[in-house]
Image (cartoon, rainbow, N blue to C red; front, side, top):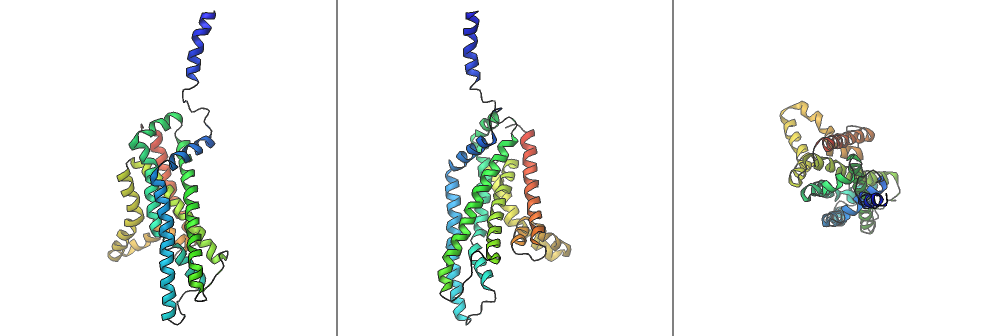
Length: 280
């Protein structure tokens, strides 16, 4: 009897180290995905570039607007709130492309390195790992975007203030568009995760994501000049709806937000379906 007990103890001890994933909480997945995200140098470079681009372009635009203010004898054609929002968010146009690349790399990098096999072994259900990655990247991207626009606003304050152009950061006409830009930036990163999961290739995923964000509006715009009804599609494109969400024109902000959300849901829905069905 003692012999049998001794022989079973080592196997039980070994079994306790097998990563079945059954006891892994979602909080543990969030910590794991945070570690993986910040272990990539591309994360530091990408977020740093978003901040530098936002603040740098805000600085240049502030000086340009200040000079324009002098040359037009104080007439800029927009109110103070719109001016500060424009200056504070101009750099995020470049930031959107950067976080799209980061979103693709955050998942495609695991496929290229083979780490995805370890991830899916630790999380046999697979989908919790995807949702954890989405949550982590969304949260950090939103915080970085918010920091970028607020820092850009603070950079513009003394430059434009010298021309007696001022506005309160907590004015709803300023704060809400800034929050909207940070939110859209985070949704772009999440959308790109879905694209990266579908394509499973860094090059292909980046090309697809940037094509939808950057190239598709241009192509639709060109076709709209040839075929009139194509122009009706423009507001429903991902980046067009993102702009409408912040600065309503052809639809309400909440309607534009639903359009953006639909793009994100389709991307993540297809990614989740393929992640469950395909081999690692």
